[in-house]
Length: 492
Image 1 (spheres, one colour):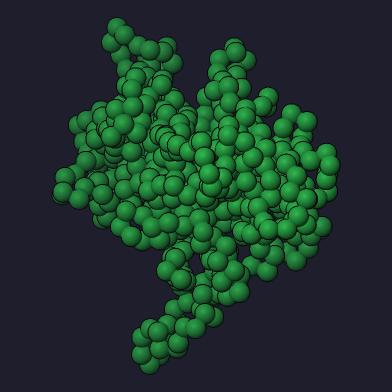
Image 2 (spheres, rainbow, N blue to C red):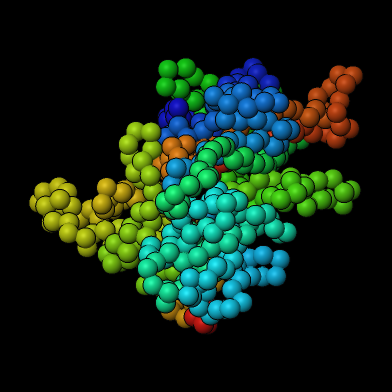
C-alpha cells in the first residue's frame, strides 16, 4: 500500500468529507496498522512490525481460548489474555519474603550452607521439586532441595525451599551475592538415594496467562459552516491510495492530517506508553474527575520487568557495537523465517553516529564509494550490522530527537542519543515474542452541526467535525533494551 504521487488529486460533487478513511481499515482491525504505515515517518515502529507481519489476526470477542489456535481470550472490550508457553529451559528467580529476606541460615548468616547444613531460600515459583538440583547464576554453585515437597508457599507470594550445597567437602558455601532478589537459577537434574528411593517428580510445563490492555485514543478535525458553504463545487483535495492488488481509494488531505497525528500518537503508545492497570489486582488506578476509569495498556518499553538500561557515554563506537551485540545475544532468538534480528529505534544524531561507527568496522574503500570521476561520493549510511549471526537493524526515528531532553556539559542532549532496542524473534518456547494486537475496529464518524441542515443535528454549532477512535495494544515477551546518555553529574 502506498500513496500515489503526482499533482494534487481532487474529488468533486461529493460530501466535503470525501470517502474519509479507507473502508478496509474501518471494517477490519487487523488491517489498520497497514493504513498507519502510510506515514512511516510518524510511525516507524508500527510500520516495521506491520511489514514483518507481527500482528494478530482475527481476534474478536470470545469467552474461551479459541482464537489463533487457542492463544487469545477476550475478557472485555479492552482486555485480552494470551497464553505464555513455558520453555523447557525456564529460569526461576530469588525473591524476598515478607521480612525482606531471600535466604535464612541462622547458623551461617554470611556463609549459608557451610558444613553441609540445611538452610532456606525463597524463589518465585514452585517448579523445583524435592530432590531436585538447581544451578545458581555463577554456573558452578548447585543447591539440592532437601525435602520431598519442594517449594512451600509462603505469605507474600514466594516459595520457601529447604536446601543444601552440592559438593564433596564441608567447606563449600554460597556467595550471598548469588542469592540477591532477582538473581536467576535453573533446575538442571535430580539426586535421589541409591536404595529404596520413594518419589519422582512430575513436571507439567503448562501455560501461563498474560494480560494485554488496549488503549483508546480519539482524534478529530472540524470545519465551519461558512467554509463548507464557500466550497460551492464541493471539491475535496487529497491522495489516491494504491493497494498491492492495484485497488485504489481516496484519502482527503484533512483526514490524512488526522491520520498522521494518529500514527504518531499510536506509535508512541505502542513503544513507550505506560499502562494504568495494576498487574496484580487487574484494577485500573487512573480515573477522571467523574471517577470514570482511564484504561491504558503498556508499551513494550514498560511491559514485563521493563528495559535493561545500557549507558553509552561515548556514543556509538566499534568497541561499543561489539560489546552490545555480545550482551544482547542471549535475548535474541530466530523468527519464523530463521532470521535472528533486533531493531534499534534511534533519533537522527544517534543514527548518524551509528553510521560513522559502522564505517570504521572493516569496510573497504571500494565498497562504499559510489560513482566515477567528479561524481564520486562516499556512502557511509548503514542499515545495520551483523555479528555472530545476529543482525541489528538501525531505524531512524526523528521524533525521538524532538522530545524533551537534558543538555550536558559537552553540549550534547540526552534525547538525541536515546535508543530503544527491540528483539524481533521468537521466545525460547517458540512463540512470537512481539505482536501488535487489535480487537475493536477503528471508528470513524461525522458529528453534524446545524450547518448540515435537515431536522436532525447532533449539535447546534455552525460547524461539523469528523472523529476517529483507535483502540490498539501490543504483546511483548522479549527483553527490551534502552541505550541512553548518562546525565547525572554531567549537566551544566
